[in-house]
Image 1 (cartoon, rainbow, N blue to C red):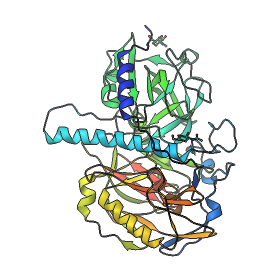
Image 2 (cartoon, rainbow, N blue to C red; image 1 turned 90 degrees about the vertical axis):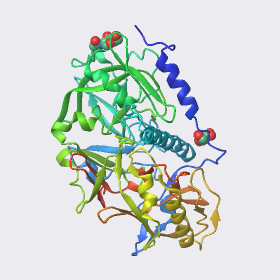
Image 3 (cartoon, protein in one colour; image 1 turned 60 degrees about the horizontal axis):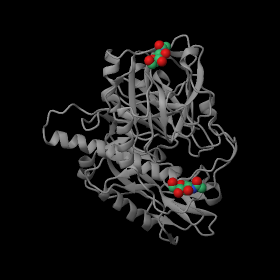
Image 4 (cartoon, helix red, strand yellow; image 1 turned 30 degrees about the vertical axis):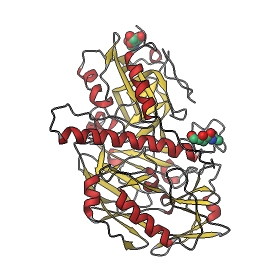
Length: 483
Ligand SMILES: *[C@@H]1O[C@H](CO)[C@@H](O)[C@H](O)[C@H]1NC(C)=O
Ligand SMILES: *[C@@H]1O[C@H](CO)[C@@H](O)[C@H](O)[C@H]1NC(C)=O
């Protein structure tokens, strides 16, 4: 039987996504212009950035490190000139206002799930853990092989998701437009469906938040906070990450009804903690260890590495604890406990961080801080940049100034402190975003509630090799990871 528009999951998904719909105000749209590696001087407590270098390059300049390693995957921004999804192969201008709007939807979904879980715990109710719900569509893609013979497909990778899925022919209900040919299971000699009564099918509930259904084969349904979704057959096939890292019988979703903001990617690679995630399914070989590096600019490349390859890219990776939290069993929690601006540690009580908790996420763009931490950061940043005229806020970025006609600007360093004395000295590319020629904005935002979880977003992770040693319970940061 085919999946039809009246499929109950579909209706549920549609109504819940509409509730989540977040309408962005009438922001002006500018091309996303990022702070780049155009740093001229670098004193102890400040970054000096050449303003012209903030205009993004329209051609791809791949990082040598990423492309010289055969056992790692190249990571590219899905909208940048290095993306295989960039059909024009030229200047794909991003819509920053749209990216920030989608980011807000993702963050709201993550936070609502975590606070719902909190309510369950507070009431000590015996409600099954709602683990592994997935949110948002992420911004970085890697290319991996599915099936036999393998078909290379570019997928968004996401540490905030568990289930891997790709669009599949015959697209019974609908497929969105993707750049590469849509995977066709009958052309793969190793594809098989997963049966309804299997243990694998049963675990979809905790991986997706939705009970699987059965139409002669196991059917998954997953929706994301930005109203994207995928529904289809739960199947198995060979996954080839690299020529020497090949996983037969990898379980993934073969999407027959797909819609959303995947930027013409073929699907999504789930790197959360749930048993269905790639991290868990590859655990025997990789020991639940992986790392990635996001490039400083969207015209460069980073990498995604697994197992022994992870943590080797940068010398001096510093490790803090990688924590679990029953409020969100699939998420990666870290113990952020302080912030310094321009060499001065802000006086923020540790309880501000402990009462929110912090997750690290590859798919959230802008770091979200507890309100008290953000207001302290904002004040210190405003003070340090007070020689520039202030500028209107842009979307969720409320701290902007006008670089005017200056050829260089000076911004304070921002250091995020983690338990164990581990410091993340955020790269200049992770501190400010040039939203327009007259708006250079602090690339952080505050939560509205002190109990909402803080999120370390991908902007602030740029240029570091971020190592997830899940089995070892360690989270590492290595400077100069991509270059
Ligand atoms: C950018 O995104 C905003 C908000 O999503 C939208 O209103 C606007 O039309 C988009 N602009 C362009 C040029 O696509
Ligand atoms: C998987 O299940 C679907 C739906 O029942 C069916 O159309 C398809 O042929 C099956 N594929 C294989 C390889 O069994």
